[in-house]
Image (cartoon, rainbow, N blue to C red; front, side, top):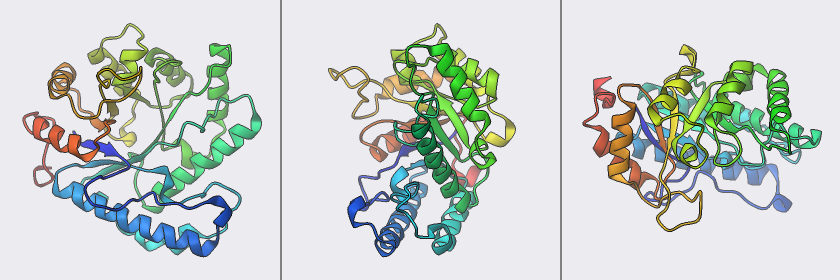
Length: 301
């Protein structure tokens, strides 16, 4: 079991998602920005390793505008060695990374232009992980997308587009249940049609349930992962007390997290904490899971 957090480390004072205005794009500006983003990403991973946080979601902004036609810089060639070194560091220390494109990536859209842009964005995300020479356990997660007044047709459209995606995307793509449209049961049906692994989001399941208890949901979603996909990934959070519906908690609810661990034992999962204080909650979670037999320190692996 690995514990992780997404995109930003609030302790170290740098960002791996620095960007700039599209109107000021130049190849030189892009290369300068990517160089700094990669330097910061390496610093984040080193911090995480020191704290036994072995799972990290890389932000989509690592290479700004990479899927946009304006991007002409050969960033994969220019930064081939830094990408390879980051991947080597993660592999050597038993660390896992993933990515999660923004909500505008909708492959079941009715508009072919939106689908085309979504596929270009997925191609970029897969290219980042490929540049790091990571195996198929480094995943890119997406939502099913819109309903457009006909859920069945929209799910079929997802399956149709999915079947035409590049192999480089297919080996990395996983789909997660969302908080209002597509339940875990919907995602499991899509898996039956396509073979795509299902990532279980605990908080979304609470908001948009499908009659499956958490333990069963973890087991059923985990069964959709093949050996080459790595240990099944699960997103975990709790609601912000008094916040609007769907708002993630500011910090880890230790009692709820301990209950979640008890409910899911002995199933092996890697847990991404979608909690606002990022590494602070990850540190607290690592302290809790040290008592869980599924968690091993790097030296114990």
